[in-house]
Amino acid sequence: MTKPSFSTSEVASFCHVTSDTIRKWTETGKLYAFKTPGGHRRIRKEDLLRFMQEHAMPIPRELRDSECVVLIISHDNGLVSSVQRFLERANSAFTTNVAWDIFEAGRFMATNPPDVVLVDFAVQGIDAVDLCKRLREISEGNAVRVVAVVAQELADRLRDLPPQSLSVLKRPFTPDDLRRVFAAAGVEIR
Image (tube, rainbow, N blue to C red; front, side, top):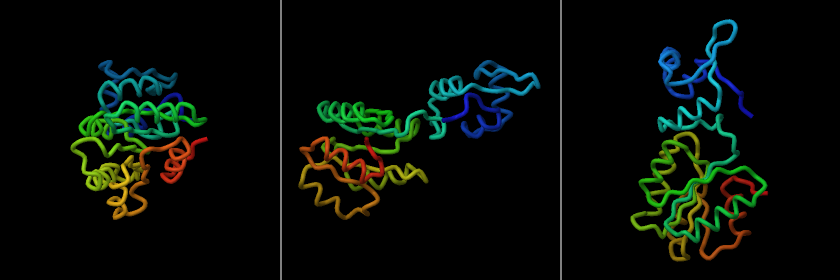
């Protein structure tokens, strides 16, 4: 659980700016802050999150309430719905974002970095091997885990990637298959 409010230096660290910039934002009303009896500025978590979302800033993991952020990249409504229903029924906290194309996926990667990316490799314009490599690069030190939803013939091609790069989910799949592939990606679903 994160703190209910933060100092200007903590907020500066989250926003990748200086404390002086945070002070200026609070003085001009761009970011709401209250003052303690000692005159120190404090920013409430909900005000900080709203500000960061309005300005398309990445939300650091330590500010998130949910345990795991999942990004689904697919144009298949059936796949998206089945994965979302599966995660909603789990006894774990998940935030699920859906990108219908690779450009939208890039926006989510920048503004709300996921812990797990579930990629439907039937999406046109996606080179599965190249995308897995790029996702690993984009995630920097956060080690995003990739779950590839593939037909059998593509599953054979993905064997060349290092095992820590991705988990493979072959179509058609069951809820037990989803549970196993998420576990292989390091996410326990209860």
